Length: 234
Length: 395
Image (cartoon, rainbow over the protein chains, first blue to last red):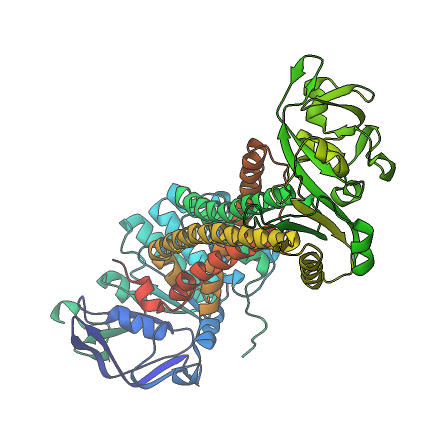
């Protein structure tokens, strides 16, 4: 089966303080439809960079990145924007909700870039908020929601476009253990019921162990570790 | 890929822009004020300049646009013997472009009536003066060709008022009694004319010998047919007069050219004022750029989120551009109202009649829109060029 996303010989470096910092050197990975993956590794190893590459927010300097079989290096930035809009859902550690919009408007925002009518967008956003259990708070602004509620709004926003892949960057990093469990449960349920592919960047060993695959980012390479492998040795 | 499906509807973009402006709060108001004041300055200054020009030109308008004024240069004393009177019909026969011509001989005096007296100019002239200066007779009549030998006088409105004169009254001038036969309506003072009708007493030029030992014509005023070329007629008239009145040098002035010169000067002044308005508008534009740049910097994260959710560079550009458009349009309209109000107040306060400079409105509004857009475009382009990754990074 064609992988949902595949990296082959990807190199990526950033110019930082006059130095060219090599983040990836000939890195490779492949993720199938419907898989649940964790990305782990020490701070600064390039987990977020990997997520940005998989999220089509950045492009490799060298090598191939295939999304659904389509080579990303041949796409225009508008085409990548359209892919992000229609195939991808992002969940951030800091939620990144727009503070002046209500929960409902935040969730409807991706549909806005599809040219949906306001009524249709709000209807679909409402359905997603209902699913994450926040339909009664749809007119609240993020400032009046708790951290867990904000993250559920963000999940609803990631889901509203019916994406094939959800990319989550430390989705539970700012949450207490009870809400962490809530959010994780919600993500896993989505994967089970809808077959949405999950890619989660995390520091949390417990969380990583509940996902099928675990990619370790270190020294410019991405290596897959079996689950019995103890991350403390990394 | 399906290109048509993905585009933010206009309605959304507008709503978004309005929303974010509302949340910008005081800084949006400052930018708005900058544009509004700039636009108001342009419109107010153009209108004030325009009204000043209209006012100064109005002062000369009374003379009409097809009048010529000839004056005799003072020649050497004794030698100069200008004629006492002018043969009007001979002049108009020789120069058919001239409709009417009238001589003027001026003499300052203190006419008396019923125990009061005042300073007035005694003007010896001929009946043709009436159509040339477009004088209006309120009571009685003007001088006629049959009055040449009579001691008749027609008085200006101020003379009539100050001395309490009515047609039929007697007016004493330098020991002679003149009968008042008519009173002339008040006319605005015209600096291009050697006489001020309001303060004058008009008498037949033939009778000036009673008042002066050697009366001489000081000026000749003439009215030219509408279609005639003024400059050429002025030249012909100079030649004719110099030939007729030998040994005298004649200057023929064309008030129309003077009026045009004044109008030109006034419009230069208007340009100057408009330029000052333009500078203040530019300052307002820099204010818009400042606010929009701060806006872009503060909302870097939001730009990143929007990019991650599928916004294209042009969607981001439009978002900020529409904010600049809303600021510019509101500012321009506000400024237009403000500028008109200020100009109206200034003009009325100066005691002039308000006369709207029609061009000032589109000019001011378009300039403001242009400046707002120009200065809003750069921050919007900057925002749209932010790479998504760096826009998303937490600082």
